Image 1 (cartoon, rainbow, N blue to C red):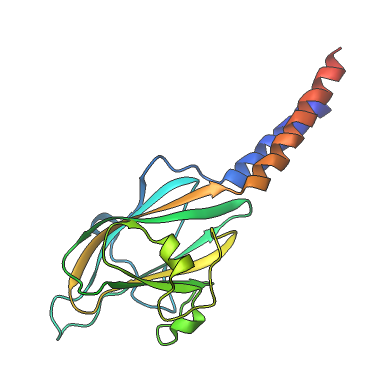
Image 2 (tube, one colour):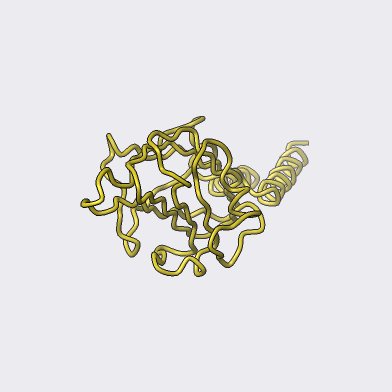
Length: 199
């Protein structure tokens, strides 16, 4: 009975590390169906990402200089044992000149006046991987990102000032390499103990 309890607890631990598993390309937020993402840097929309691909679809910018800018801001918390390994632009519609501003900041808020306080910033003007640019070619400074984003809370900001832009972006979350190894080792030990008790 004790071994079954150990196996049960190990399974719960594995589920906790992996979090909720997203179906491939699961739409986490679509502004057409879920409503407009926040444009308030002090109160971004809170989203939940699971293991796998998490898609965010929206529209931001402005279609006339007399209208205010529609920023898109959201916050995500990566649980212990999770990491964000890819930020990919799947589609962009509209013409945004040199590119739309994209930033990642630590915590539940982000400065809209001090890009140097962000982790990193870049300009998005085409489809493809964005995390590499944030790591290797930051725009307007930032404290720096050296690789995949690990456990913690992050705020993402996308903005265009010269046009109205539609976009679809995919955020890929995977288990941290060490997290699965620890749980697998624990499960192997529990299975070995269960087998010894049965003999």
